[in-house]
Image 1 (cartoon, rainbow, N blue to C red):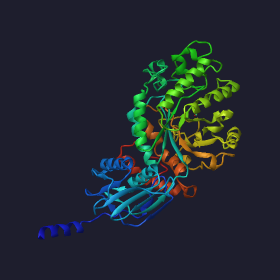
Image 2: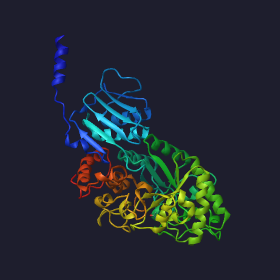
Image 3: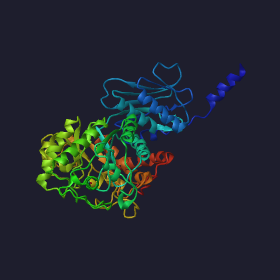
Image 4: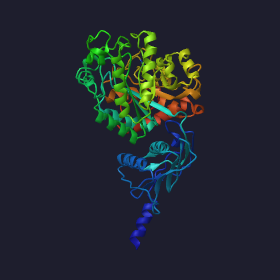
Length: 495
Ligand code: ACM
């Protein structure tokens, strides 16, 4: 029996790395409370994930396997005496979670599966090698909507690229991905009743500057929706109208008032196209698109665009929205649109996405007084396609230069006069693709700024602190590096 005893002694004596207690709260977005204990948990081959929520348990096991090579079993039953990670549903935690890490167990408790998933995203951030930093975190989101927007119209991004992006955004507790699927240049989602939309509008050469093309088939879209849902991200599809419709009119000239097809356009001008507001064909088209999109979208929102409709006379614009917004409700969804839709009384029951740069928008404030809710995406703070500084090789500048601190230093709950925090559903970072052609471009512009927007959406306003944020961001950098994310190494951060 001497040998096993010797082995046991050797194992006990092996040096066990202890994670820094200081690093315990290096989580993004900042949790509501984090108390380190120094009692780290060490993953090993005998660790079990015990849960009756396999959707969360299996995803955590897959992540741990990808990051450490350990294949942890996921089991619903009480684990034997070995060390375990337990993921439990229990009442009283709202949409938040509680995470307790000590030497022998990790326990995540939440009231909803989404809360449990959020807890596991924190857990993943506490991991360093096979050690998980010890302590207790209690956490809940400030806002229910934490969005990221991606433009597939100006340049198409493939399903695999979108999936890689989803893999990153969910780690920051982003829970909505808004896909901009149509614009003047191209049309990126299959619509069975109007097949030329993608035959022509998704053809090669329909990206900006005639570069790229492509579209999502319904099967690809459904697969993306499922992939996102498995990571507790809800897809919000957008069809932009009544402006930004040149690609649709190239494919179907009957969507213009004179019936003449306009030339295809792959420049980046905006505001020149409009659906024909007085034509019944327009509403047949719009209803078909909304019906088909609603049928493949389990999430609550259909985004109907509505921005920059400079070629639509104002009265026509309101008439159009008054007819189209009820169509979204007819197919069981909530209408969501850029803030211009607030001009229409029909929009008061819907959600406006504020992309304005002003701190005041009386039309939107008036709609809010009538019940409208708002997602905050001010272009001069939350448009991640803006350059970081004058030397950024990608991106645009019309809303300004947006370094990390600019993206971080604002408050969605007080940003717009007459839009109280109670009317704010959350935040969304927009990423337009005029200059972005591939996933490296997307990552370079999104990260690290998306972390700032994610924190504004999740963390309590009282925790807002640039110095603390930039220190946590520096600690997060190696995670992006390890996953091959091409983030911008902002000089504002001590990486
Ligand atoms: C927008 O940036 N036109 C919504």
